[in-house]
Length: 429
Ligand code: FES
Ligand SMILES: [Fe+2]
Image 1 (cartoon, rainbow, N blue to C red):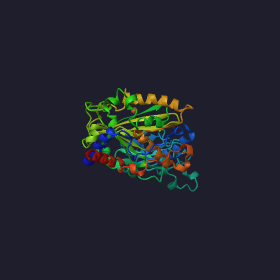
Image 2 (tube, rainbow, N blue to C red; image 1 turned 120 degrees about the vertical axis):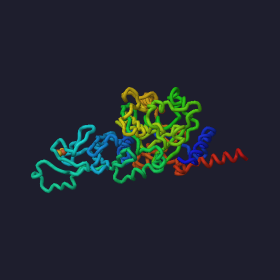
Image 3 (cartoon, protein in one colour; image 1 turned 90 degrees about the vertical axis):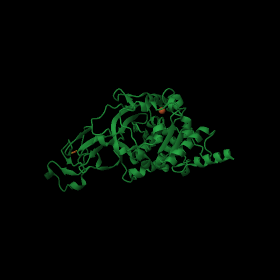
Image 4 (cartoon, helix red, strand yellow; image 1 turned 180 degrees about the vertical axis):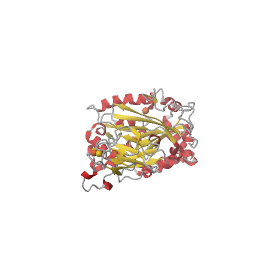
């Protein structure tokens, strides 16, 4: 982030703190239909379109560090093997043998010279090619070249490995758009995996995720934790293409560090290239569809939300820290969890425990829809983008979200800047 952007953000923070109503140019947001959380038709549409077409964070290079290393990944509801190929590329395949559909690996992870199906012994290379079969004399005209494992799109952003089930999807870099540039300062190519844990929650996945997509709830739900340090009235939301979003809120005067950040071990290396905003504010990104992460010079800790049925989900917590060098992994505390990753930390517990209550009340006959405020614009933007990915015509009309936030609000556009300048010249005049 250059100095001009930093200065503009600082001005926008003051603008947000001083405004007495939403920005003039900001549209009135229609209610989000309640059925988007509870109607199985919408849940199925998410499954068919969102989970099938979006780039999803699946693994870290530390989990498949050498050729032949593999990891099973089923968080998106499909059986996937991620394999470190012989030439160094990371490959992803359906874990589905080309013979009779048995899984090719049944271990969570490991390292093998080739991938051999346990059922009848067909074996595949790390590139997914069929190498050998048992009793080939019993097959007539079996073409090895079209009997390899079925490939899935797999691309890296630094040390992070993403998959996408859609052959037509844009590249990962195009998907991230301007965020990929903005993230250069965090050096994702040098991040190491310090912790990765998963927790079952009793609520729809969007209920859990949305608790991390606005700061409106901070004063009530996190009154003794986040609210002590986060200056929510100076929060600046930014909407990016493809449904991504960012919030930047300064740390309150007198509270030097966020408590969550303080839980990171003090002997890890800081990311020296992280600028002023990442060091002094909560700078948090939502990457469509299911990643939320506050990024700072201390840690890059994505939270991921995965559906597990319509009223259950899984929360995955990652802690990424800057490369600790050649030595052994230092004793690292996890950003999000306690007790060796068996318990959620205080802030996430506050969100997740309340999520179960929200689930119950959203299932009541009394729940019709959600009126969102300007502060919660990132949630609306997510929903608009979800509808475009699903295809608006595929959605029953009563479950659609009207497309009211226009391109003029999508980065690098920002109507607040003109309003801010107009305010300034009014008060100067
Ligand atoms: S199903 Fe894999 S070898 Fe038969
Ligand atoms: Fe929260």
